[in-house]
Length: 253
Image (cartoon, rainbow, N blue to C red; front, side, top):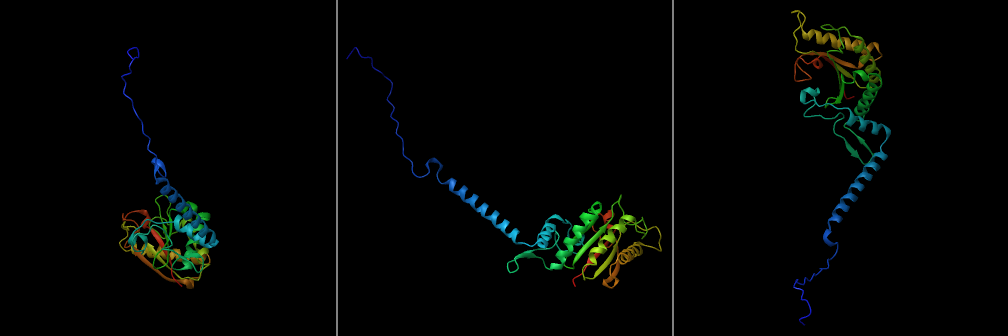
């Protein structure tokens, strides 16, 4: 066999192992598929619940998430803790097939107020804060440096303040609930020693009361008009213009 050229390269034998089940992927795809199915079930459940709600309830839920305040404690006008949304905690009522808050009427008042502010008072939207507390529905009619409600240092309403209060009156008069009216100022000292922020806040609250009544609000539903001066600020900065405001609290009936 000397005439045959020998091949000195090694011989390699390749053995192929037969896998079982899903090959090298294992069962990971099953977990991903299960997550997908669960997410789809949750989506269709939410869509079904929304379809079951009434129109009024849908509006209330929309306002719950759209209109909000980020104030804390006394900054939220009496609310306790942190309130990120108006309307208070809500729960699903299986018997009625809808969502309701602590008080259905509060829910309707809040939704109606937000609706009319968007329609007729949109340019004042940042100055009209609406949210619920344990006391009821609270409206904070605040001022901005370039958009005041009152003449500086007086209780004379400017056109913007008249528009806001007359529009609010038309909504509040639709409900039987009573209201209280509060006057607030910032911490800037009034130059007249015989007329302080206490008097100014009281006069502005009374001016707001008269404006509500002139626009059809039933005066018998006003239970109290009071002054807080700068004792209950809305913002941490005591000189912030938002602290100059009139608060209207819609009380439980």
